[in-house]
Amino acid sequence: MNMNPQPISWESAQTFLAVVEHGSFSRAAIALGLGQPTVSRRVAQLENLLSEQLFRRGKQGAEPTTAAHRLIPAAEQMAKWASEFFRIAHGSEAEIAGVVTIAAPPGVAVEQLAPFAARLRKQQPRLQLEVLSAVAPVDLSRGGADIAIRTQAPTEPGLVAVLRAQSQPVVVAAPSYLATLNTPCAWEDLQWITWTDSFCQVAPRPMLEHAIKNFAPIFTADDYLVQKAAARAGLGAIIVGLPEPAEEGLVIVPMQVQLPSSEFFVVCAKSSQQIPRVRTVLAALQETILGLQGS
View 1 (cartoon, rainbow, N blue to C red):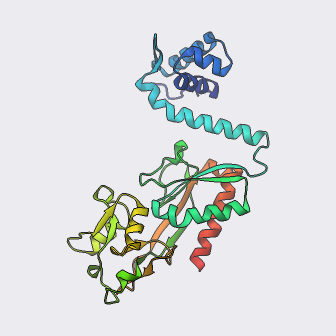
View 2 (view 1 turned 120 degrees about the vertical axis):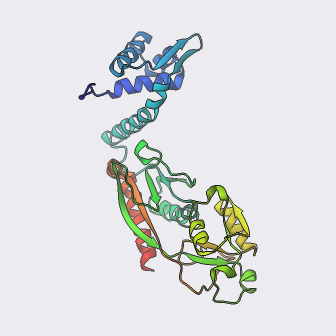
């Protein structure tokens, strides 16, 4: 076993990625502005270095092997950082421009990041936010996003929690539904709207299942906006993570007990903190979140 493996150059990774993306050595050579023998030689050198076959050659082109598929995410990350190196080296980040991707839970994306994007646009008109609001976590270490808002501290090597904060969830409902209740309410007094069984691990459903014996929601959905629409229609109550409802049509339901606060973290790769546009968004996020904490 080689305890000191030879590092793989960006030139090798770039060539490998080009063959994957274009499906043949000849098309990869054209895209890279190289001769096909050069591309073949680089791939052969990489295969020798890794002791793995990376492509199966055939009449249809070059098909990646299982070993190649394992390398693709890392090669794509190298491509991203090569691009960042080029941009910074040539001063193209001086004006704080480009796209910054933020991954966040659906509720945070709707309630906080959408309004945040509007405010950021006024401050930094050349910056664009891309928000990923899927329930499944995004792998920051492989470039799935620049920034993530998570409910747990990062444990992956290379990631850092830039900010740790808390939010105070509240129960909200349509005024028409609130009028049918005797307040303050106990957990069991309400008809609950929440996530479907396939998303039973997504907050706040675990809290509801813990607080209510034989929990049976009145309505479930796999989409946060659908849940909010059901609440506005008067179907039942929903828990939101802001100090107060973010839009018209919902009012706070007085409860017998205060809901426990929720902890969250603003996370990014340590290396991403040095990218000017990411650093700018992180600073604006911290200012917004700390402003909400103090309000």
